[in-house]
Amino acid sequence: MGRFASRLGLMMLSGLLAACPGESSEQPDGAPDQTSPAPDTARPGDGPGGADLPASDGDLGAVPDLPGSPDLLQGACGPSTCAGCCTAAQLCVAGTSDIQCGGGGAPCVDCAFKGALCKSQLCTDCTPDCSGKLCGSGDGCGGLCGAGSGCCQPGCSSKYCGQDDGCGSECTPGSGCKMPDCAYLADGDTVALYTFSGSGTTVADVTGSHPGAIVGSGPTRVSGKTGCDKAMSFTATSPISYVEVPDSSAWDIKQGSVDLWVRFDQASGTDEGLISRDASGTNEPGHFSILRRCNGAIVARLQSTTGEAQVCSKPLAKDTWYHVGVNFGGSGGLKLYINGTPANQTADIICGTSTIACGQSITTGIDGNSNPWVIGASSWNSGDGVATPATLPLRGDLDSVRISKTRRSF
Image 1 (cartoon, rainbow, N blue to C red):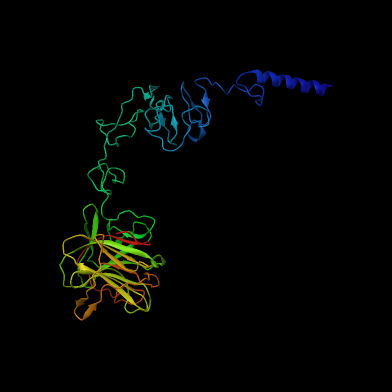
Image 2: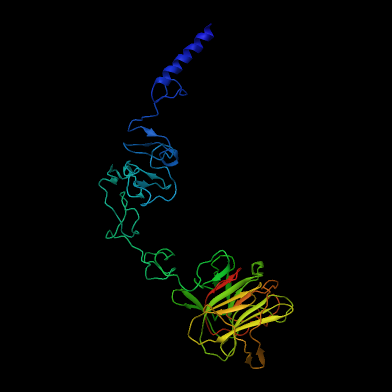
């Protein structure tokens, strides 16, 4: 009988608690009301590391699961998505709290930390500071830095992508800059890309996978083609100088392409190597070279263990930038392009005692050999697996040397 009375009493108490607005039947007797905290009551989790911080009228806090609160979405918070202010976690909040104050998508400011209040989404008695900041960034008082406030406005409309935007950053696609002719960004089919930026003897690969090294003292960095930043300048030295990129399984490309920009110091008269992954003889397949022959024509040569092919251009002038693109492998065979135009000269080229038979093709790729890449010279007289002896030094400049695992549309 006593147990029944106790249970009845508990049921009556639960009914009374359920009838009280804002109180949960699962709360222990005497639990505080969690629905309507007083303005000065701390709210769990609002502070750094979960510390309790005071809330003021209108403060929605960092509670993303409150129905109807504006801080529902986490991600790209900013002027286009938020009428209040953006927290460090990229949450949009009302911006009327003393500890989260701001409007128009500006970063939230802790006015209380400054000894100020938040009024109309701005800290009171706060002087906006935009000096040295980018326009569009927070002014420190809950607003955004705008034109005339001392902020820096990036300018890319008349520049090439990759150049300085005037505020300490690079112009990127979509900022109003012009895309340069040269490749300076790696895509998913880029195995390696050498833009010759930086300094020192290391030649960086934009993909970060296959850096090269300057051999000798000849190569130097100079201004490249307009919009393309730096180029590597080569000259004849003794011993010969060039850039070497070590062998890698990444170079075993059955079907792909090599392209680059080149400018020559002289009209013609001397064979010159542009880029080469080659060796003397044909003990290994996939020997590949792009050269400028004695008459000034570009020749791309590809060898297997059983045959070779050479495709040739017309003679090219000095002091002019040319884009050279070569596709290899697959049914398309070996193809050469100069400034986007197919080069298909068939007349033989005579250089001393050598006859270059032009207009041939071969469907093999550059896979199967163990040779490093040589940039700025030729390795077609080297031993298997080494760059030495390199010959035929380039007299001119190279820029944006790209090796790809796909045939490209030049």
